[in-house]
Image (cartoon, rainbow, N blue to C red; front, side):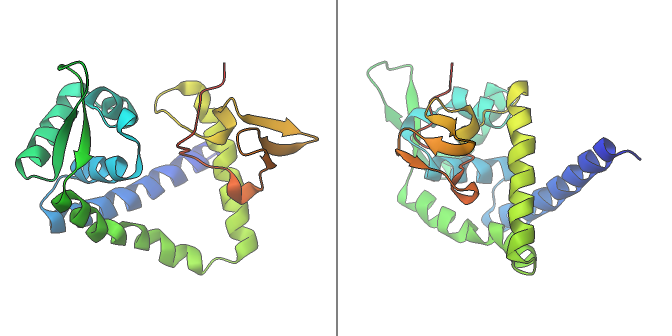
Length: 187
């Protein structure tokens, strides 16, 4: 196997680990893995991103798939619709039950937390650097939206170092975000 195949296989295996963890947590909650992902996304993002169209793009599925998942979560009273000026457009917010469910889902990151704790800090930094490099190249595919520093109009290289014009400060490697709430896609 060549390097590219090895990397793709490694990513696929990591994806399998994540999917298995997601299924395990979803089972405990009586939800589907997609429903769990939607709850976690809504909990972490502004209402402008929490609509059916955006969620479909975010998770690379159809609007119908998202609508079905959302309908179930509305019935379970985990989500509620938040109206806008246009009656046809709404965003989704968590209910009190939805917030409680999200708190229970904290165990999802444990699968990786435990493994990463055993890796020395210098090696974790190399992993992060490699992920940023790969994701930076994947930005070109536009398959899944990435709101990361590397694609933001506020991000620049200044004297070879990363710099955020919004924060008006240099960014260390660990400061680079994959999902920035202030992200504005660079032209």
